[in-house]
Amino acid sequence: MRKANVKRQTNETKINLSLNLDGKGVADISTGCGFLDHMLTLLTAHAQFDIKLRCVGDTFVDYHHTVEDVGIVFGQALKTALGDKKGINRYGDKTIVMDEALVLTAIDLSGRSSLCYDLEVPAIKVGDFDTELVEEFFASFVRNAECGLHVKKLNGKNTHHIIECAFKSFARTLKEAVAIDKNSNLIPSTKGVL
Image 1 (tube, rainbow, N blue to C red):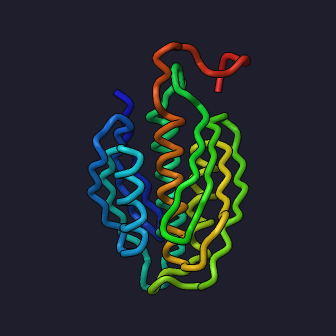
Image 2 (tube, rainbow, N blue to C red):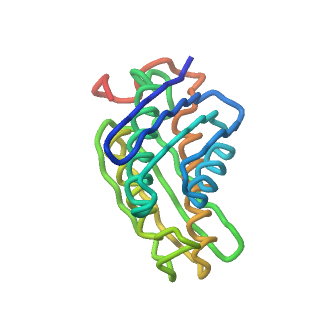
C-alpha cells in the first residue's frame, strides 16, 4: 500500500496529513485558507490520490507559514509513500487548459531537488491569498519530495485561472509519474537508486 501519514508541529503550524497514492480522488482538507483548500481539493481529484489534511496555522499573521508547511508535509508524504520507487514511471508531464489559461508542468522523481518556476500572474492577490505563495508551495514540496519540477505558463490573463490550471497540470503530472509501469518492477534509474 502506497500510503503515508505525516505530522508536523511548529510554533507556526500544526499539521496532520494522510496520503494514499492509489486512491479515488477523495479530499478531506482544511487548512484555514480557502484558496489553498480549493487548490488542494482539485489536486486530489485530478491526481486521484486520497488526501486527508488538517492544518491549524498562524493565519492571523498571513497564509505564508500555512502554505509553506503544507508544501513541506505534502512533499514528505509523497516521498514516504513512494518508498524505494520501484516500478514507478518516474517522469510525468502535462499541459492543461482552463479557459484562456495554458500551463505546462513536468516532473522527475529523481531524488534531487530543483524547481523551475515560470508562472507569471497579473494580480498579487486572489481574494485574501497572496499569489506569490504559489511558488512557495511548490518550492517547499520540491525540497521535501526531492524531485525536479517545472511549472510554466504558456498563456493566460486571469490570475485564478492560471493558478488553478497550474495545480490541475501538477496533479495530472504527479498521477503519471507515480503510476506503476506494468512492464517493470525495477527502480527506473541506471544508478539502481533514486
